[in-house]
Length: 179
Image 1 (tube, one colour):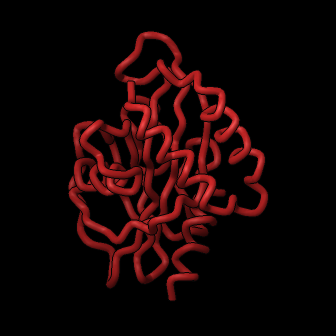
Image 2 (image 1 turned 135 degrees about the vertical axis):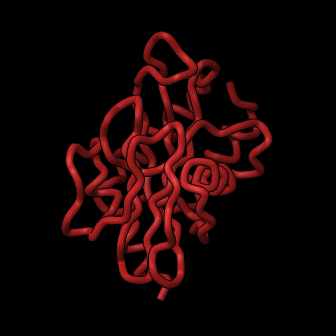
């Protein structure tokens, strides 16, 4: 469970951030869910897609699902913000420090069984883009992942978690807008 102020700050962040073109319905769904206030048993998640200066994207193959996608995890009460939670997850899972863009690139509301539950639970996943300068740094795998690799955006691995291709496009666009 998450403190009310984490949900309030999530709502404020989503209100302050324009939804990506084509993802407006996901933003509305997330805001409707938060506004309804029925998130006592829901999980708040922060995820991140990292782009390096050569345009490669970092993807993780998750042990639990066997699919490639963003790095991320549950927001913890000690996390000062969603972007701080994304940075913490990136450090924990990939031993990587990157510049996290302060505005999310997407939001997903889905129900699935995670390591903290025995039944499917609603998860609100707020997804950020992050950037590393220079070439992709060497990576170290974690206990939660069975793979962690840099990929060209036109040569993504399979199987991918749903919407990963769209998320890579959004992260790449965010990286390009950073100059």
